[in-house]
Amino acid sequence: MRSKFLSNILLTLVWVALTGSFALLNFLFGFVLSFLILWVISNGKGSSKYFKILPKIIAFIFFFLYELFKANLQVAYDVVTPKFYMKPGIVKVPLDAKTDMEITLLANLISLTPGTLSLDVSNDRKVLYVHGMYVSNKEKFIKGIKQGFEKRLLEILR
Image 1: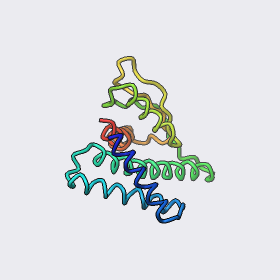
Image 2 (image 1 turned 30 degrees about the vertical axis):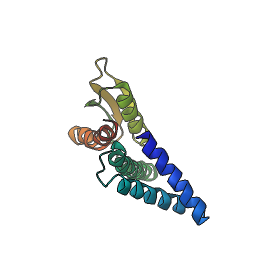
Image 3 (image 1 turned 180 degrees about the vertical axis):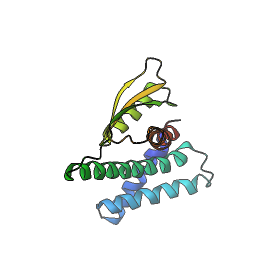
Image 4 (image 1 turned 90 degrees about the vertical axis):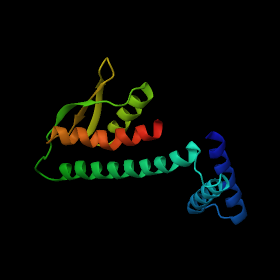
């Protein structure tokens, strides 16, 4: 997987050098073009983990940015309006993540979004305690974390 990524970067740099444009959009286009070239060279089988994981990583980045934007709007709206709409609470989120890295990444992603904060992990590492500013429905809050961040993160890491 590492060699495919390095080949992708090298082909991207070749593209940028040939076109002579060092604009971000040209880098992105070169990266996508290089990815497609590598995929075609490997007979389009996509059997390499690289061809499966890179689209998931890009989709995850967009998902995270969407969730970050949505949470920022929610908190900003609550701050600028005279009435508070907060319903704070601490929720036990059961974990499918098993390794320390999976749990740490999930906890950090949760804490990066405004309005949520990872507090603790149980000793058996099966539960993550999360403080949320807007916990009007506990099951919906848990489902949002499980079907959102955790599911997508585990698809990439496993």
